[in-house]
Amino acid sequence: MKLDTTDIRILAELQNNGALSNVALARRVHLSPSPCLARVKALEQNGVIDRYVALTNASALGLGLNVFISISLKEQSKAALAEFEQRIAEHDEVMECYLMTGDSDYLMRVALPDIAALEKFILEQLTPISGIEKIRSSFALKQVRYKTALPLPVA
Image 1: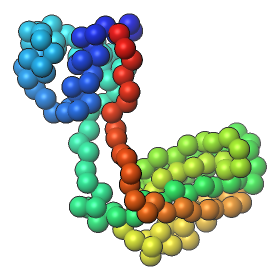
Image 2: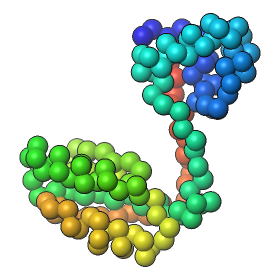
Image 3: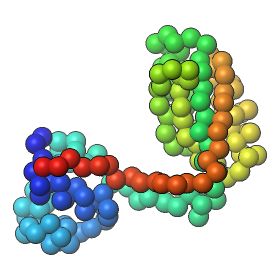
Image 4: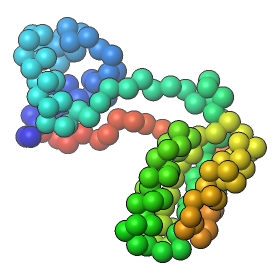
């Protein structure tokens, strides 16, 4: 889908506030409501808008510990990767998980309340997964930047 400047403005507004009503969005992007809604529906149908979410505050939910965990697997077979990915997808604490190049097979970010919860997660959730060779953790001391809005192309 080729995006024009109006599509980009719509995306910018929705990335900033996905709860905007169509009327408010139309007003902000200088369209009438009907064409604005048609554009939003086209962006959704073409997969440009993936979904709408409410972003919650981790600290307010008692999840003050952000941990980055790198995991190396004993083997890189298709079956081993699929098994690990399936098992990791079962855990709500895992916020992101990426298959990496280089020394670590996977890098994940986990949101937890405290060190005790991290220990429990590693011992009870990660170590029972067959095929794991090495687990390394790094703690986020301070969140310098966090954003969810993607950089938008220039139309």
